[in-house]
Length: 42
Image 1: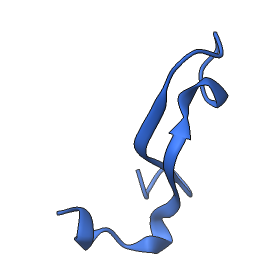
Image 2 (image 1 turned 30 degrees about the horizontal axis):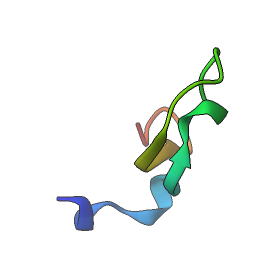
Image 3 (image 1 turned 60 degrees about the vertical axis):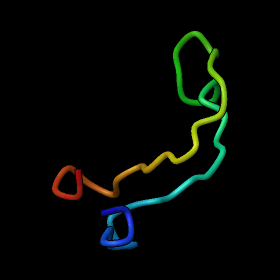
């Protein structure tokens, strides 16, 4: 299923520290983080 994802849906981050994306600045690395470009992509 992961290989069927269209790369135009958003930005892909591998081993991304979640502390950069949480309000308390805590969290270990995520194997995969996808930030959609827009609400429709979500």
